Image 1 (cartoon, rainbow, N blue to C red):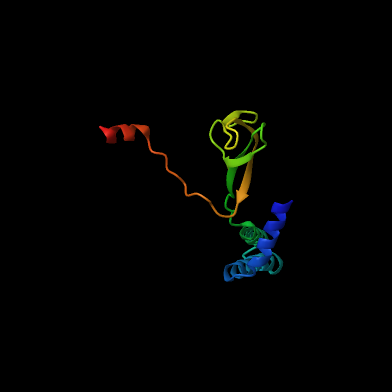
Image 2: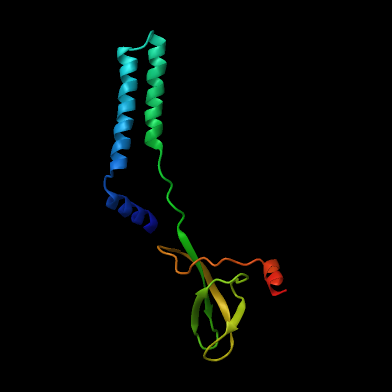
Length: 145
């Protein structure tokens, strides 16, 4: 629900651009030209006028439907760890192999193992960490030799 409201606000902030205005004018032009072909008959015969007019209307409505796809939102997966003894809560980035109720890491206060309580994903507006490229292990071995 909140995501939809944010998208609506972004659409309202955009306003009218030259590109969208030209696109709308082009759509109106094709639809009106198609209707004129059907109604007034500029072609050689009635069937040609109908097909040309219908074709122009189809082009206009197709242009009207073309939209730029929104980019995929950037997501970050987080893990919440909880110490059952002292109640310390720790939030960290998700690591491969994390699962709920798993005993993981030691508590900073009492040195007992902490349990994974929640794993969830949040949508970010900006990336927090640059993408890290994983090096191929074979290349590392070749570089060492």
